[in-house]
Length: 166
Image (cartoon, rainbow, N blue to C red; front, side, top):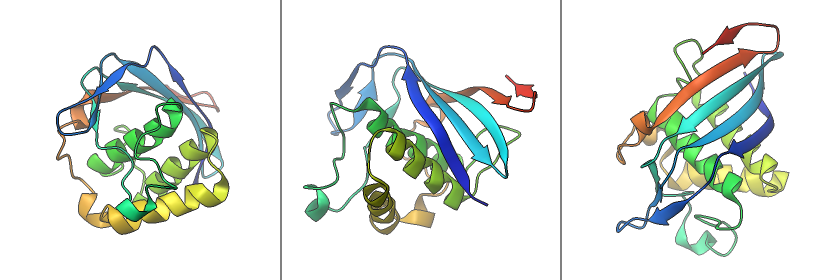
């Protein structure tokens, strides 16, 4: 199955700092809102990233630093592509108790948010490939080494055909 991110945006005040480990840590709660299509069914998802959420940014080899930013101080949605991808992987694709995404679909979400953040289709594909090659792919499936899995809550899912799961 393929997943398409039709829309992505942030709600709330974004403030963060770099931890001693060089990771980004959120100082306030912020909501990532996604409109997703899967199997011709459209649904909206609200992911609440809580204060204290920590991420090591977009994984990439050092030689690619010129083209792929680990963090982008000017483009918050770009950063949340990595945040959402890390969170989905840490939960083995469980968006909620009613929706589980495959690894491939989690990667689709990553690319889709990057596209919504203004990254070209080509570069989003290259970035997805870099994450797969240099972040370990399957070995990170279920990994929560930063302890951030419980700092994100899927607060609402609304199906375009009328169903809602809060």
